[in-house]
Amino acid sequence: MNIIVCIKQVPDTTNVKIDPKTNTLIREGVKSIVNPFDENAIEEAIRLKEAHGGKVTVITMGPAQATEALKSAIAMGADEGILISDRAFAGADTWATSYTLSQAIKKIGTFDLVLFGKQAIDGDTAQVGPGVAEFLDIPQVTFAIKIDIDGNKIKVKRQLEESAEIVETTLPAAVTVIKQINEPRLPSLKGQMRAKKAEIQMWTAEAILADAENIGLKGSPTQVVRIFTPPPRGNSEMLEGDIDEISVKLFNKLKEQKII
Image (cartoon, rainbow, N blue to C red; front, side, top):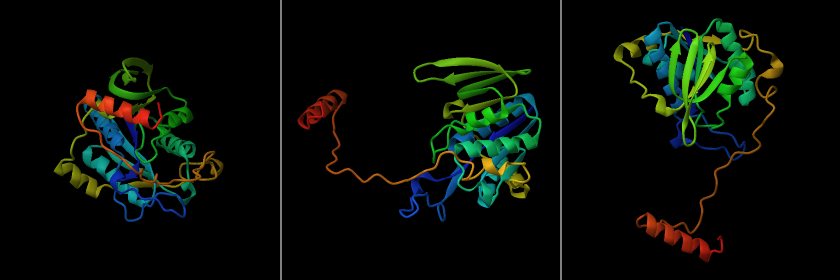
């Protein structure tokens, strides 16, 4: 079974800062981590490989420093990592990113399953997994909490707001996972040594035969006009007591301010 995991290197959320002039995230000098939901996708891919055999390939789109995210995945147990990196990809929205990842997957060739974390913590759109599935023209299942594979069929239990449902489809398919699906393993010493020696492939826009009209800022139908940190609210107050006492206090305060 050939499994592909799409991951993203994101800023540590405790260190996110915004440039007030450009309204973009300041990434220089900020610690980067593997998107937490993607760690669950990596773990699930490794478990499926252990159960069914095969290969796990991890890919990411980003600058050269994103190789560290790929090596983290290899340390966990992935077989190889591919970095999709080119200045032409700069400014890509979720549509252009999905297209770029799909082109890389097509270059990889035969695959059975593409896994994603449900969303990236820096953008929170949850659009890239479904977007890649659309470009690849394969079935997709989102918010998975359990995956079972039998031959060319995949059965996924997916979490809804107040319940769960089971969806069955055929492979190849794309699945996005949530944190409840598993507990990501810690890299072993052997895995860390293998990751240190691993050679990460780097593919450019030309290498994946990407259409210049569909990548980067030029290929992005949506653009971020402004990003800003909300100003702190004044006169904040912490209500204390048990749930009944807090409910009464909150009701009275909302009534005093004529909100209700």
